[in-house]
Image (cartoon, rainbow, N blue to C red; front, top):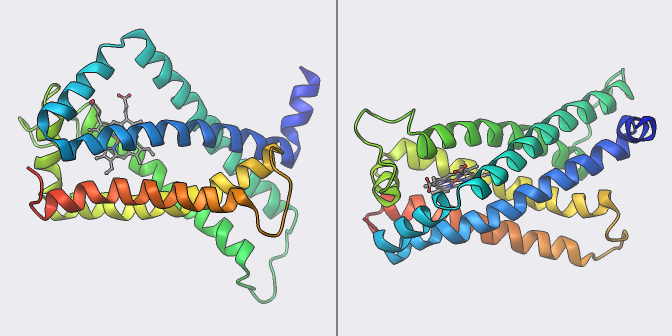
Amino acid sequence: MATGRGFYRSLVGKKIVMGVTGLIWVGFVVGHAAGNLLVFRGPEALNSYSHFLKSTGELLWIVRAVLVVALVLHVIAAVQVTRQSRAARPVGYAKQEHQAATFASRTMRWGGALLLVFIVLHILHFTTGTVRPAGSFSTTDVYANMVTSFRIWWVAFFYVTSMAALGFHLFHGAWSSVRSIGVSPVSADPLKKKVSLGLALFLWLAFTAIPVAIFAGLIG
Ligand code: HEM
């Protein structure tokens, strides 16, 4: 136990926790994107997929619990890593150097904060229906929930912006997490960077296509 705490106290320990919990979310998001793309096959396909997920009962709640725990740990570790690296440099740079590394970490923090806000609002929007106009939420017609939402320009815009943040966050995060976990060695032209770029592009495209296609009237 003491060893576990000692491990977590180190910067590397926290980064490993961020990496593992981030990868859990990547796994979920890949499945979620593939499932949501069924919207292009029509109401029947998307709604039966949603019905199938809800019919898994306990399994669904286990997945939800794992995701919540992973998210909480990810955010706590991110806040602590930020504090720890700031404490290591109590006096700021006389001149801010906008190097690649600092740019990446800044976008990770701001993009990560936006994603956190997105996830909370997204669940209230599509899972519980709390932040929707009265009478516009159906627990069985997910297709209609999507179409009525993304016909509103600012809802579509919020999703498109958040998905850009997701793309950046994932590109840097997926790439650096495998390095933190130590799965892949440091190299000049790493395969993991290309895989992360491909993954980030796929997810960004898949998730952006949905609100854009609905807003443009191509679906619905
Ligand atoms: C255009 C992008 C997205 C669309 C259209 C979308 C759509 C949906 C829909 C319709 C649901 C409710 C599913 C149902 O009731 O059967 C849902 C749930 C959810 N979405 Fe998304 N989603 C998008 C992006 C994301 C992203 C990027 C994340 C994570 C970073 C995410 C995380 C979740 C979570 C955690 C749930 C709750 C699942 C549950 O516990 O039932 N979604 N999404």
